[in-house]
Length: 161
Image (tube, rainbow, N blue to C red):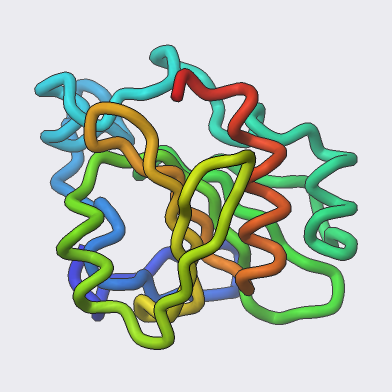
């Protein structure tokens, strides 16, 4: 997805960070781009809602309150959280990407630990947390580092690492 692409949810438009996994939509499988069709990018069972990685009550606590229930966006797929006290959305997705390349483009890059594994947080369009998984897969959370770390810790036990 180019830096000028956007996600529209209700009346809010969110500009997507560069390199966040956007790709052409498959007309036969909406929400599944070329990466998913080729088998790359699939990390959770087909049809699994990424919002199921973090129970809503736990997400509410991690984000500091939600204005609405989490919503699954088909592209990615991505779980979108709308914090109660903030106008920017929090997103959670698992994607296949070259984390070395992403890290080279990040600003204010900080190495952190999530669930006993190395992770990274910094500015990549927006403040984003990246947690490497196996096979080039990465748990990606757009949010402050603190929120990203909390959501990642909640999602990791539900992912095949």
